[in-house]
Length: 106
Image (tube, rainbow, N blue to C red; front, side, top):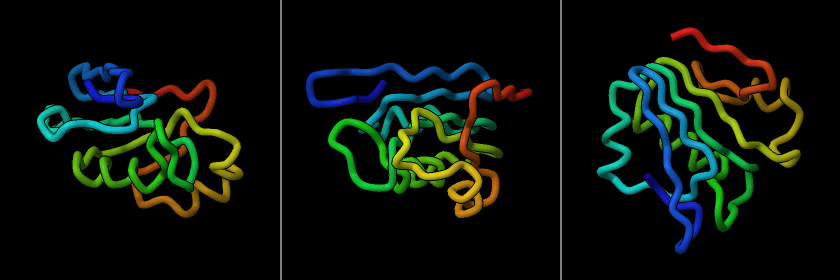
């Protein structure tokens, strides 16, 4: 679990090698440790600029580096994340912007 804001707790899901965390702003160290060994991580990043109740891209990338999945997908994005092809090209290897209809095999 983590938090969307001080008064709103959210739940992430770990299903074997897949972890899905969306609508997060904070995650405690002990909860992040539960994600170790995840092969595929989906995590929210609303935009580039900081936001009071969602990860921005830098915060999402920091969690991705910490967890170390084989692949990571950014989800829960706003139009402020930019055009898919342009932003995708700036992401580290193995990190992708998710899209409608995406299927991931695990």
